[in-house]
Image (cartoon, rainbow, N blue to C red):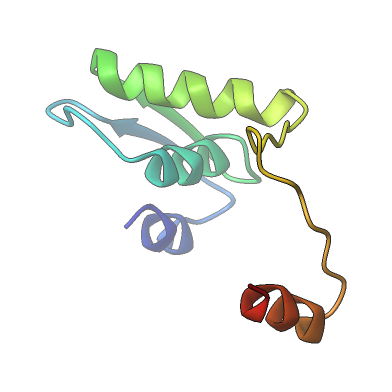
Length: 92
């Protein structure tokens, strides 16, 4: 929905997005909202509910932190081709 909204906006205009009544959003929606408010089109948001604000904050922090991949006690197997992925999936 946010992608469709972004596609309908004119880059030469400024917008204020009122989030009143939006109690929660998914992380992917928060990611798209971040893209919308930090892109070429000037979009500000207002009336963020606490959960929505926390989700946006988590997405924003995630943009600036290095990604860490952990596998617990499982080995990490690097596959460079589709064939090597299929071999690993078929391995017993």
